[in-house]
Image 1 (cartoon, rainbow over the protein chains, first blue to last red):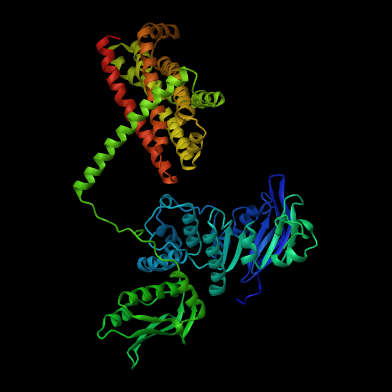
Image 2: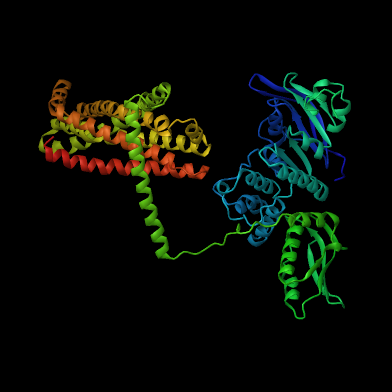
Length: 256
Length: 375
């Protein structure tokens, strides 16, 4: 479980909807303890790639390897066991509306651990404290705001202390301070628990604040243009599209 | 190694909590009773310190426990010294207390007595009836706008609703009506043959289908098929704020969503019912001819003579009433839908239940009226 060793390995992935190829020939490695950013312009297939990684959509070619175990080539049961080591935060929280926040977070704990109800309550309470929602256990999702839903979704994603946390646009719809707190929380989880984090985002502030590794997808080329530390990509990547994206389109001569 | 927790009191009266073993979410964890007991002691401990020399692997299960200890200690006014904890656990603990709990957010579950429960239910029924009346008022106003040509709606939507509530319902209406006609004919043949009046099976089937069964059965089919769809469609639009989006553009959801649907059902249900009558009579003929000793011509003329224009128009009028009830129940429940997936399910259920109750109640009332009018 050493930090720095390969944790997720994407090999030759091609993603398509029917005949329409979204991305092809994706190859990248996420190391243990990385905060890995999947970035690119709108509509380039970032979220679709995430779906492939968490088991919602199968790739047309290639496979994702978790610690050298192929994900899609494995049987249904092994895949389910692997999925249990992931936590996913969906774009708008995707909380189950018929359950309270405590029930949303406690469901996986109830199903997959031997914890008693009181212990589950304790863990749920702690996870909600982490995301700044202490005291909201008995609220239903439709009774809280959009940003709160997102944070509750994060608490649910963290319920089982996953090895890998996937985030789909975590800071979209959050105010700057909440977005910043979320970034801090992501780094804290990585440092304290050794969680590997994969983030889909095009929020530059977040990319540079938390990302130490990344892949850049391009909608026109339909493949990845770069992979590596986003800060280095911004300074010295040979491809102008990548540099321009990371500088918000400001030409280099004018960039501060 | 199993997780363990031991408490010892140091000479300076600080409580040393020793944590040992693997504190993981999947493991059985020791309770906090020893710590609580020590906190309640008098004299109270001067502080709490942690000893984690024997601690193995840990995850947030440990941190959740530490949160409880810190809360309890704070309640007793006892200081907690976290320096003995692993660096990561200390960070995660700090993070949990970084955001203050919002005041007044916490809810306490409250038991309500039977009187309060009955009262609340009653008030809810009253409120719902008032909502329904308000909806009917809005609908009338909306029809007024429609006839003055001031309502905004898409003609293509209306065509689609008509298609969904009409042509697409033909297969199921055919099947059900045909079978019901057959059932009626069976019953008729079995009973009427006893008196040698088997030929009157034709009257029984035709009158029952045209006046009562076809309108009621098609209405109930459409309540389950189309009324439920209306409630679910409009309810989901409400959850997705699509209804709000219409309102902000100055379009009345009643004009845009409700009135076209109501019109579609009011127009299509009588037609379906007429078609259902024919299918039922066809089913009855099928049984009648195979079980009775009559010719097709005899059976057909018996059928034609039994159904007068009054029965036909009476049946069609019933269909118009049922159609408007189904559409109103579906759309009203859709617009009254709450803000979640669960609420959509509830309003769909309510729409179907309400439609069926309204259909059967109005059928009884209309039948009594018809009898008194001699129709």
